[in-house]
Length: 363
Image (cartoon, rainbow, N blue to C red; front, top):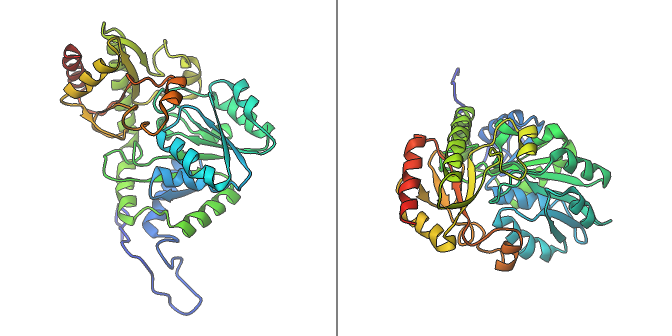
């Protein structure tokens, strides 16, 4: 038709021309033309051959863990989204799969917890919420040495700044809810791989459990992808300016942003990423209560779950995204009750800084 945009195939099923023959589609739980276009786009921008688009980031993660069987062992980064911890501890564990949490910025620590039953190493880089950066070359080396799958949640980095498959990762996962769609309009996730056998298993799992993204959500995601590179450039530029502002403020105790020289893994981030994205974590000198006062007094920044949108959002991980992680585990991993997470949007950076400065005066 010459349409510059793909149509939304908002259909549940497809009429067959005759018994035993379809035209490439038979039921939208199995496949859908709009979803297929999105998957082709997502695979391409992440240097992948195959992509599977899911109903949410968590359904994508869960489907990855369904590659494992009872008796298997998974090594997971100790600083990951709280929903992943909840899934591993309360759902995956009930399926007979053991998990060990480890600081994946320390390759020796990772090696120390791998056993003969380990089948997968799952990491985030940068992590949520502490923005830790793992050395992908080291993680790939460990995975290959032990013949295990390496899965990388690259939601914070996006393919604009990091493409883990190029380093040799087996699976890349994104919560497309975040930067890849970018407008707080959809819930979605994607798995990208270069291994046909992994792709075929993921498609089978998805079809069986029905964790598919809707045609309309896929279309909205495709629309968001058109501005991804522009948005990510703005997110990063503004985040660096805000991180520098916070680091120089008397009421701020510490700032975690991979683009700052003070970040513990700044050198690794600089070497393996082409940019540092738009996520910042920080703590106030006044502790937890000061952090709460800050979050309660912002005007432009929205106090909300989620991240990676055009709107700037501020989050209290201890009571929001990571509330299901036991307090002792949070503290052991360095996630204090006073930690503030900031997802920098694309508003005028001076407006964001002014909002934070005003709220800090009341903190």
